[in-house]
Length: 185
Image 1 (tube, rainbow, N blue to C red):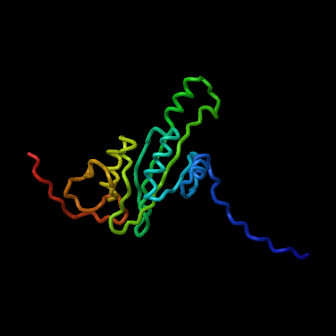
Image 2 (cartoon, one colour):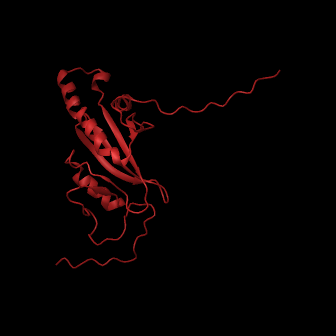
Image 3 (cartoon, helix red, strand yellow):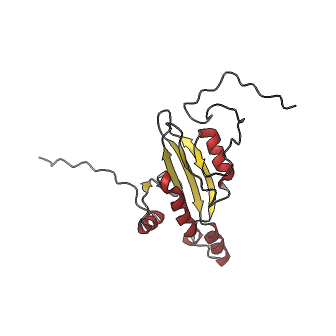
């Protein structure tokens, strides 16, 4: 009995979600990434388009920056800066209607990711002008990963001393053997 060889199936990429489809209609280039473990749509954007895309999403109802942060994919790999946006006013309005159906209670949220090279000085535009809550979050990301936020009004360390060398949450960071604190008294 001869069987025809089966063609290997190529796993399909993630299906575009509603926010990705909306961004496509608006003409914004982006990279579709797998949703997170809770089903939140995750979208990759280029650093040069970050402010424009965040402004467009804010105009579309994403009025709350829930979280901004960064992480290191590993030595020799990329640094990632992420932004989690939520349509908070829509959620509050739905709560006032009293519709408790699961579809009505679903919050519109999206996570944007910007992938940066660790070479030289990674930088991207600050979104402080759009979301004031980005102030300390961007400063912490700078302090721990060395990602500069162009246009940030207070671009200085938040957690580490001003004269600290290096970026402690990078996976290739080497902790100094000794650090002398200035006498605070």
